[in-house]
Length: 285
Image (cartoon, rainbow, N blue to C red; front, side, top):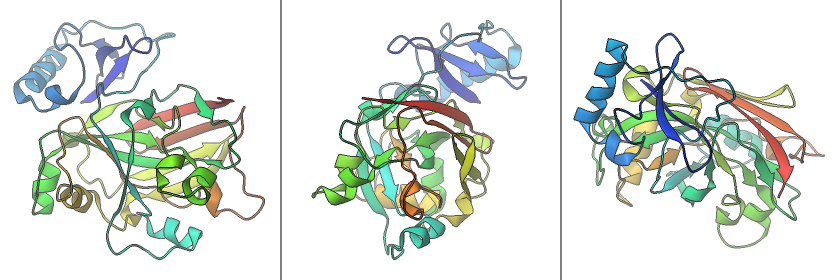
């Protein structure tokens, strides 16, 4: 299933994109798309049954905002330097273990919402990423099979980053990762049954129409299952938590000087095979 949330910011309603590409209202079946729903097999079954029966009301998509596909996210866990080609372009040694950092849940916005260039920024960068959405409470997982069984679905994430804040301002990466609007998510949460192999997805990103990133999750240093298993040994993952799993080569930081960092007025578009497409215009904060 392709689950999403539509409407003005803070007042989104749950929806479903059916097999024919028709937007349908889920608000009569479930109150929202959130962690408790993803952990509730009976509720997900009601959605499937209503979709199969064709009884869900059609929504007019014209002019309707698409919000983040998940409400009340507990935490956004991020994996850094997780693609072989990205490590090569930045001159970094591939890590021996996953590099883990966090984004605050309030950085998450809709896939077509405005992204704000922070005040004082000179190095705002783009990163297309596969987001993993947790569907069952996970702690101390032992096998890849166990890890994947705890995944509810997948989505497109844009891990916007300010490289000066991240690398040159002391402290941890968090300074360059948690600026307002720095995690567009969606357009859909695609349930795991529609993604048979998360290591066989193409990822692309364009800036002002120019292709910048063209990668595949096959290049991940630590595959999705290993990431979920690993992280579960350092923290408890709850339904509705999100893991951003890293970005392939092609970011601005990896380009020759002068590096083409983002500015107000730029347009970024990104997509992952089967998971949908995003588009954001940048403006000054």
